[in-house]
Image (cartoon, rainbow, N blue to C red):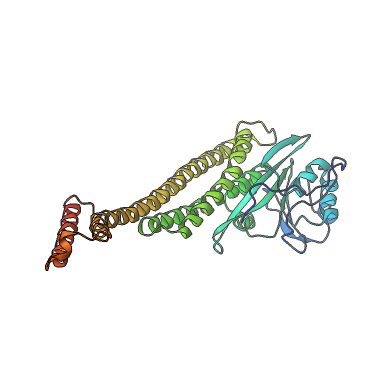
Length: 355
């Protein structure tokens, strides 16, 4: 089960900027890949063993995108920071994978920490990965916890020079990355919506403890999703208002579109949370109704046997002189009376729709 309140494992008392990886090790090796392009037709890409190789490739007249997949090798992250002049405090945030999504401007670059999420069909839950983005004047750095294919469509657009990606600067590349991250939230919500519909159908037909477990699981997933998307709204909202000078004026309109998508995600998340809370109420009502049905049956049975118990206890008294004891037809008559009373009560309960 996902931990909603992760524990910080960094030792107290360390000096600020001490680089320690906090979180789960999700890859065995670190992979550094790059893309370098401009509007004049220049394009190159590949993988490097050391970040020092990037310095010979990067050019002020081109846009350089460096992606680092894997965060557990501290010396590699430190080397990236030294090469591009990233403050150690920011590198410390990159290595702490339990960070809250945020954005900060520093000198001639800004950095963003976001949550990249995707859906795992088995066991049917959200898997999150911290995504860190550094935007400079001519470069974009991305830090992933593991190598995934989230940005392959964007890479393909750059390779084939589709759209305006190759005609724009590093700020447009950063926007494109944000757009992909937000679009993944819609995919998650689609899967969660299907699960909610399935649980709702099962709840109507057969409310059982397994359904309660699924409702609880969905509730935790939505809580985690809400904690990821609300800070994301703050980050993109700040960018689209022009608070970050590195984003050009013609890119802000695209950021506004991403901000609107973020608002749609938040509205959907809140709607799903209300629906899930309603499912929990429906479950509790169903269980209560089942209990009421059981109690109604038991009450009817007890009510029918009350007068019968009276007769049996009456003739079970140890008195010598009971007039009916000497009657030849006393026993059959007593049975007749008890059956008549029972049948009359059943008829009355049925007529009142109590059965």
